[in-house]
Length: 336
Ligand SMILES: Nc1nc2c(ncn2[C@@H]2O[C@H](COP(=O)(O)OP(=O)(O)O)[C@@H](O)[C@H]2O)c(=O)[nH]1
Ligand SMILES: [Mg+2]
Ligand SMILES: [Zn+2]
Image (cartoon, rainbow, N blue to C red; front, side, top):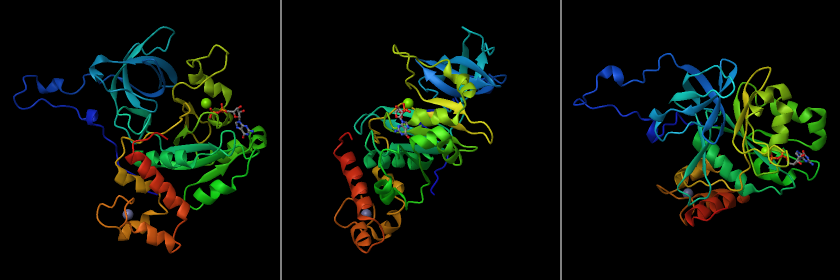
């Protein structure tokens, strides 16, 4: 499976004063050598809950970070009041380099990119087999975002008690992407958590999917309640007293370790920030067929070699259709 290197944002590049700079060199590096290392667990209106030495600490971004935002999963350096006591506030003075970055835009023509999670190893794309109906378009889009951001995809199909997984497995079963199918019964007897868990050990896994597919139910089955309380207390409780996921929320796994990151439901997964030429990487079953393509082929043009290759039986025509649909909705800048 393809992996991309370190991701560097433009704003990751620290500007260095030139030779004519008047500031002494010792001031170039941040002076917070005594800062504590932490990990961002959740973000709520500018307040970031961070894990530092096993304590949860609420922090805000220091002014020196400028416009750069810390997101869930970020490794950060903190100074100030690190006691974690009520009503104390630490400051985040540095965001460490990220190993991966899951990004989306609300729609394809939305210029504002939202970073969903930093440093995740894996993207669990959660789809219900019914209620709500599976949406292969959204799955394809999540796959594109995963490959582009340097995350390994995992397909989780929930609610198999309501509908069989056959149709989705036909599309995605042969893709070399690991998948797990779960049902209500398996949630209750623990099998669902056990089987999903096999794919999570030691990794940071972000769970994404449409609202109502069962992300939070699954995450709760994976993380015992006392562990959830570590970050749970900062969650917004709605008027009805029901917890709704408003920000991504990282929760620690016990045993072999690792983290699960619950995310708010997404209706669409805009890909405005992704170069169209990289979309093909989310279709590993089709990628070998592009060898015969003309240079800089968009894979959505008459000379594209994929038509003949798929016609020869190397891949499922439905997958080529999915690729073309994704490329053309992007071109026309339509939402999903
Ligand atoms: N029938 C059935 N319902 C499920 C299953 N998993 C979750 N649900 C229900 O689906 C609804 C939405 O679940 P939730 O975890 O809040 O979804 P989220 O919006 O993705 O976090 C809840 O009523 C769950 O009880 C399942 O495997 N089978
Ligand atoms: Mg939820
Ligand atoms: Zn092509």
